[in-house]
Every structure is written in structure tokens, then in C-alpha cells.
Image (cartoon, rainbow, N blue to C red):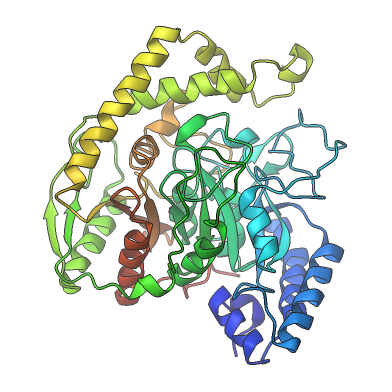
Length: 467
């Protein structure tokens, strides 16, 4: 058996069942690895080894008695620090959050994991309130990419992605309001799924509204499917959640791609600035679906560039987020977050409602387009990872993160499921992701497409240099 930190969630689950490895051993090995190596990456902002080891011990006893709570019983998982975790502070990357208040509730996804017996290994870093697509904050500092520590892992689930890439955990929970699962998955060479909106219940609801999703992150598609089986279970606290469907996403990975109709859009019809090496890798990955028996057609979806629509929605949500914050606390914020909140406060009600209407039209056009295709493929991001401490590789305009993430935020507006899967590396050794969007509600299909691609072009076994 491989070293414990190399094992996937599926391999750990099988090892627990066969008594080849124990939850206590696996948790101990990962905690030791985090203690030894995370100072280089800064992917965790909170650890509670005593609690994690106690959870592992309880899981081991269940496995020994033949009564595991689920296949994920005893499997370590990291939680993004935007998600409530009972007994642990959720500081959201901000100096403005009071750590001393009672932390007496779990987010729905965390609650389902606890019910499934998973071991909570710690909390991952995030930019302040998850507002941007890189991961650094005034509270926790800079999180780095294991493939090159001078580069960003992306964001806002960058701590989760970096921890997965560095083999600190086999599973992680992320959130995605404009690409925050898929962007760091691409930059860090891991897999991430933004499920259909409402597939994974949320509480409290995000101040960024109905663009915000909760989803699984992992090294393999199978692991993400196993995680979605757990976190998609119902929770009455979310009034916007989809009706629960008892789908076995792991079993559904066997779906064939033969005969599937796939659209490939290298630039969505409007992206001007694109790293050619990234575009070339994504195009080659899209064509591999023809080897699987799918029909691949290069075609752009309708709707044009939704950047300004999304900007109005996101910026005004930032203003809503900070609406009651006193001035002395505002002075503790990331200056760029404060800037977009101030700009968002100047967006009129009519402009906001106009943007909401434009979003609806864009989503309607995309839904109609997807009636002709099973999947839409694009690059995940317009660039590979760039230097830490920067908001953008393009310019210093505060909106510029929307310029290098043009393939992710449109699918937050449309609510449909979308994933990023590793599809190659640049000449400098940085990962690149292929973006797979599916029809609304077809989370199983997106996972199956990703699994089919992973089978013919696997990258999940590749480890960052030095890790």
C-alpha cells in the first residue's frame, strides 16, 4: 500500500473495510504531514489535533465492530473557513470577525459529514469573506501553490486546493460564487465541482446570493462523487435547496460518453485575453472526448459577455455584506474588498434590478443552448497560476479578476453544474484545467464526463515537486 498521505478517500475507505489501514493511522499521518510541511504553503488556518484524533478513534471502533456510518467514515476532510463548524471558529479570513463568540452550529455540509463519521482535519484558508479569486488575507497571510510556492493556488477555495495538492488531505469542502472551487482546482491540479445551485444545502445563505454554491474538492472524480453523496442530503435550514434526490453519484460514474453531444468553446465567443498555452491544452483535452465516442463540435453559446452583469451583482452584494460594519472595523478590511463594496453601494436599485433581469436572460439563453448539447467544454481559467500577492496577472484594476476568470462566473449566473479537471501542464510545470459544464440538475452527468476524461488522461497521481 502507498504511503498514507497518498491514498485517496476511496482507497482509505477500502483499506478501513479490509483492516489494512486504520482511521487513527491515516489521521495521524496527515496531521504529522501538515505539521511538517504546511508552513511552506499556509493552507490551514485552524487545526484541532485532539478533536481530529478523537473522531478517528471513534471511527476506528465503528469499523472494527463492522458498523461504519458511511463509506466516508474515518476519512479525513478539510473545511473551508467560510463554512460553520461546531466548536471551531469560522473567521472567514477577516480580522473583523469575533473569534470569541459561541460556535454552536455546523453548516449543512459539515453536519452531514459528521453524521457520516468523517474526520474533520482542520479549516482551510480563504481570502476575506471569499471575495476574490486568489487566496491571501490580512488575517492569515498568503497561501501558496504547492506546484510553485511563488505562485497563487487561486481562490477563494485556495487553501482547500493547496491542501489537496500537497497531500494534506484526500477531501475538502469548497464554496464557489464566481469560480472559487474551479479556479483553484485548475491552478492547483486537483478536481473541483460546483454542483447545480441548491444541490448542496447551505446555511447561513451567502450574502452574495444565488451565485454562491457549496461543493466537493478532491484529487479524483470518484472521491468527489463519494463526497457529494453525503453533502447533498437535505437540510431544512436552506429554503432554496433542491428537492433531495438519492442519487449514487459514485455508481453513476460508469455512464458512457458514447454518442454524447459536446460543445467546445475555446473563448465563449468573447474572451480577448488568453494564455495561448492554456488554450491549446484545453483544446487538446476537448478533442479527447472523441476517443470516447462523443461528438465534439466547436461552437460558442449565445449571450455575449456577462462580465458587467456579474460585476453589478457581485459588487452590490459586497456592499450588502458590509452594510452594518462600523467604520473602525472597515479600517481592518482588505482595502480592495472595501473598494468594491464602496463601488457596489453606488449601484442604484434600478441598475441592480436591470442586472438581475440580464442574468435571467443570459441563463435562459444558456439553458436553451444546452438542450442541443450534453456538455459544454472550455478552459477552466484564461491563465495558469501567477505570482502570489497579485489580484491579477493582467493589470491592477480591481475588476480585473473577472478578466482572467471569464469561464467560471457565467455558470454561477446560470446555476448549472460545472467542474474543473486537470488536463495538462504548461512548459513551466503549472497545472491547467478543463472546464466541463452540464445541463441544469445533471450533476451526475458532469461527474461521469470528468471520470471518463480522467480515465484516458489521468493527472491525479502526479505530485508537486518536493511534495
